[in-house]
Length: 292
Image (cartoon, one colour):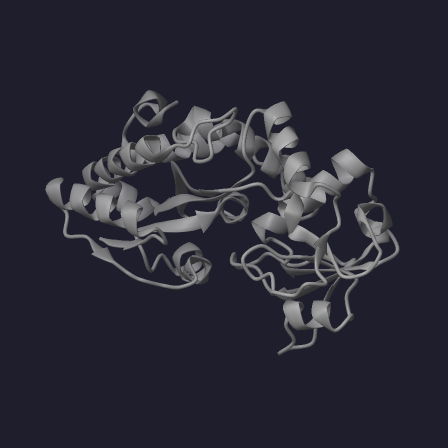
């Protein structure tokens, strides 16, 4: 049983629990962890894998054998990831160029959702550039999005002025000229989460259908162990940073699915209960077993 998890504490807990449940788990260390997604989704080359929330939605929409184990491995605010170098602000996105690593990158989906809902931006009036394809085979960029020439990178294009805005999380370069396009972005982000009642989740845990059937006891044990780690480390506050359980993740998945459909990231509407039902059926448990 192969596991791909970016956090050492969650990986250690999941490995120990799966072993005690009678499995022979192995951690496959892939950094950054999102590079494991393509092989997991399209080729089932791992059994349990950390995935971006939008990758899970795309996998379901395109009929891939991917299920959800409702554990948040990365939850964070996102408004601060829309950055610029000049005197532009979020009000100037229309008519200007915006770069994002991939159209299906979860950070980009969240930010574009904020642009439409909070700031009234017509996404098709901005000039979008992507630098990578999708993790899920069959998914393509919308016709109104441009792919950058092979070999070019978003941080370099942004710093050298070839794009006016960049949506960047972990890949944000260090440069004193960079500032957030949203004024007081962190405060705005915190207020958004308080108003919505959830954090914009980035990464969760996916399980292959085959592993759910063959290693159900080990998968459930891994869930319990990771839930215990996250619950013990939860910082408190108005919303959970790392929600666990189907109900804990419902709001984030539902909002992300609506944004993804609006942005042509997924080809059809995805109902969260479809994902819950498929996951529970494969594992042979009722939703309540996984926080439903």
